[in-house]
Image 1 (cartoon, rainbow over the protein chains, first blue to last red):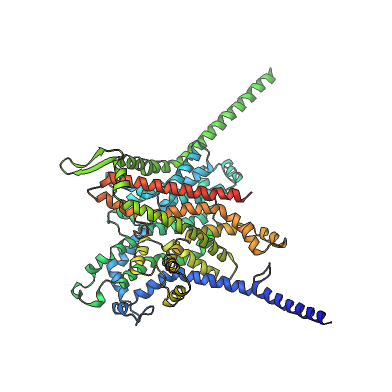
Image 2: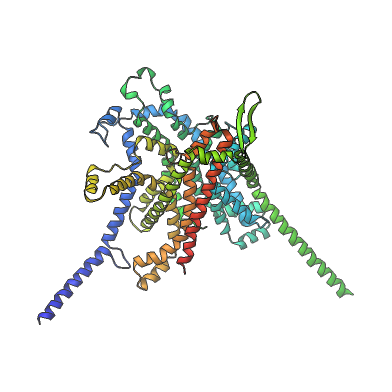
Length: 321
Length: 309
């Protein structure tokens, strides 16, 4: 009798325990609260760590120089202070540099888009001798570091009188040697490979030229690839400074390039008669204000296009080998 | 007679067809070549020629002589390489740093991005916002930003004094250093995760959903599903990500993260070095990178075949 009672209790206990376990840990088909909480917790922590540098920069960029030396102030400035942004705005010559950056990145992105899509189309839809070799060589151009090329390329540009000229960057972009062009060619290549052969043949029978097929059939099918390429290439050209500074010789200055010279250009623009004024001195608060200003346009662009960007990522075959 | 004629004409027609087919094929090939033409031009002018030039220059000693009209090249064969490898250690040290950075960062980045990709793959509220956050570094990451963060702080998590004291109390000293190092570099490592997360996420989403359903009906736990379905699917991408990461880290503009490009660029203007020496440095860097990529690629690629037995 006693034994049976005991068993009954333990069974009851077990049932309760199982129920709790199911709610917290979830069954095979659904996820429990514990699992969900863990997931949100992990994502939030990781997300915070991802954003930490940006948060740190924005909070520091609002601090006055007195706040910076004040040990009691760590995160929240004593009062909201946009003076640093004013200083950095002037030192960067923001409006002009912004338009230069947008124009520079935009035109190069366009060139890269045109070249990588046509090259990928040629590789994907036509059979000719050496096609495989071209693909291997494209992969090779991806692997080689840019340090290997910039010295002689700079010479070539000089001989062609292109240094200090946007064509020094544009010419490689239009001929399939732009920044990470290999990656973009491969993305387009995969998209064009997915076009059914019968569709193409039908178009040929109807008398469409291959170029017409390219822009009437292939391009509309590769819109996700176009979105990804434009967004990524735009930010690549925006952010690349090493080659740009070498080839352009400082004649064209984008925001990140001006940011590099911020500490020197700062005193040229801001009141020099106040050298001894503590608040005017160039500090990390000013540097961060400039940094934020230089990434702000990209963040704005990203916020606008992110929906299509993320959607396109789902559709792209970026991942194939 | 008539039949004969007919046959002749038929054979002529087929002949013509064959000819037309060949010419059509050839036409297509030519057309295809037309699309590739810009690439061929770019490849020769901006890849092949500079590559040959760099290799040739690396065997030369370059001196500047204003009277003789600019730079002068004298063949010295492997002396530049000898100087770099045995006499002047700056590049060797940068190589070492790069090598160690790759070997330590890459596994951590891959593990973290697989975890984040798996988390982002879950159905949940606010998925769009989380994705926004994790893809942000892809868009805004630039050398100058990293450099500012490195010089003025903000790239290392400040571990509170309390955490450190606790760790000091319960663990030996070397562990404290490791933990602080981890906290110092974790941000950077995470910011490099952007594209790998993207690649893994896209792969996970491509897995057929019915596969998971079938597995769970057969009684597989989600733990088993992860090891038996998800991981084998994303594993081939690991080698792709490795190639991407090595190239990415080799080309990053920030001197704090990769000083090699800067060293080569400075050598170009250094009267004791000039172009020849800088070219030799660049060739060595390319070799190091190719070897690293090849070794890491085949290490991870070979395993896949073993695992699929």
